[in-house]
Length: 271
Image (cartoon, rainbow, N blue to C red):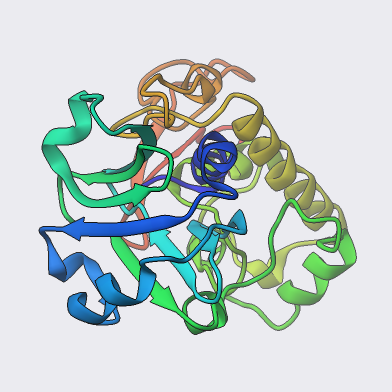
């Protein structure tokens, strides 16, 4: 599933093409992908609304209209891109939402597995209100992270995957952050010392910053809006590296299961 760096890259890739454009109509062939409202009201309500901003909140793409907000979650296989009306794309075979723009272009949402979700709401907090802080924001300080960890006793990996604890992280970047900080995925949050917390905080921000810089990890379905791959997968240390030598100590990377999620780690560096 696309995580913070992948979703941020998509947002940056469509922002300039969308801001200031008016949605003149929308067609959809998968009503189950529309979380709210019902399809009849959705089609009628969105027509004529102009894009004011395109942002990201956690793993959600947040498109501020006037007066509503269009929110899209890519889930596993979603792709979002803007192209001229007549242009054909490989991903078009799985397009289930087409937003017609006022400049002979279309915003298309392609999703082969049909797990993606689309929302049209008056208040974005209806969808994103329960999310935790943004780990790359200036307001997310080491002190903020320490305070959020206080009173937590569960294993680190499930905690970092919890979107109400911290928004935007998923399997790839949690594994990478835990490796970078030398912490085992099953380490209990209440066992961390001050130095452990500081290393984990720095590692989270570093791996996410690097993921954004490399425009996301194209390890499965994820592609940038222009159809090309990101390059973050080329810099991964443990995720997807089962059996390969740890870049720090040479021990083969192993894969195990933590909280029902495939988890990659170095058994020597992350005891």
